[in-house]
Image (cartoon, rainbow over all chains, first blue to last red):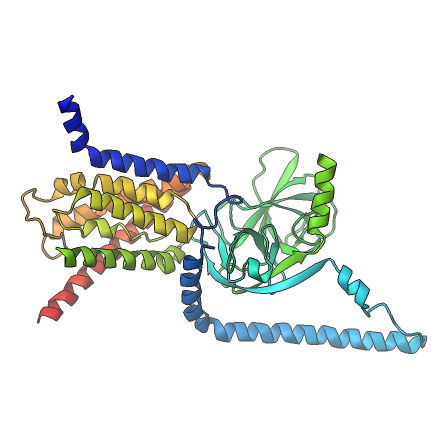
Length: 285
Length: 172
């Protein structure tokens, strides 16, 4: 008995190490990107603030490029505005009827399904297989888990997974757990976008029927989704990948979002999300 | 004694911030990511309490996990290495060194490099295998391990050289 006691005392540090490692592995295997606790993720307030401070310093190095990007975008929108204005003028001149098609009245405004909230990337990883993005907006600013995120230039970025009061963590397209349904711009057949972990600029479009015709450079858009509006740009077909079986094609898709330089994003607020959700839940019950 | 503990906690904090804010964002050629925080285990004095070694290593891994959203992975890998730290060091260094001796590239070049190579490769191998338990192919993981290990060892030895040189100039 005494010998056993001494044996345990002498090897207590091994016991401690085994306990700690077991606890770590418990975390590894019980971890689920959607149910992960806020405390253990980078939406934790302390971690969020460290990232925010580091990002504050970092952002100065990108001012010049961001500025030029904004100017370009501004110019683009200005052009569209001009085109629309002239079009409007033309239409209204032709038949002197007041055009109401482009005017939103207050009621229609309330019923508009999607609204966009700007947010800044506080932290972003793309080095490993477990990529994520931390945003500097949280539940205080109206962000819920399950919201879609797109970049300023319009490409999809990911889905909000964990939210704290001031920060939120986004599961990006470049995470192996990410899935969204997608289609080619000229057809209605839909497939699935996922990421194979190899290239940050490329995702894979799978499960698209084999008879689907395609060309390099075809635009890939979002299809039915609970998260994104339809017809958002995901990327462009770059090449045909290796097929896993005879019935479905796999494409490599060059992503419209460049994660290397991602800074500003828009979070999509779907006003009908809850209503649709409740309806579907009641049906399932 | 207390000052030396303080020094170690500071080193630990510095390594965490370095890893989280800088190194984990590097991804050379799509494969190599430097993982330097096991440097902490190299620079502990020979006579350091084994419980302190294991618990501080676990805490370090755990904090890095929170930052990188990888619950448990870094903590598991570094804790395993910490548990064997004393045994590994005894392979390369004389057991009869005095308690406050800290291994360094200037005092024991060959032994220190061998020690570094062993600890870093063990740590990165464990870490990347835990990370890719279910995902991806073996060759990709092995390539990432080999390139990351090489990059980390080079950086770590460079940092050790710089730190010691600074100390020398402070004394002069």
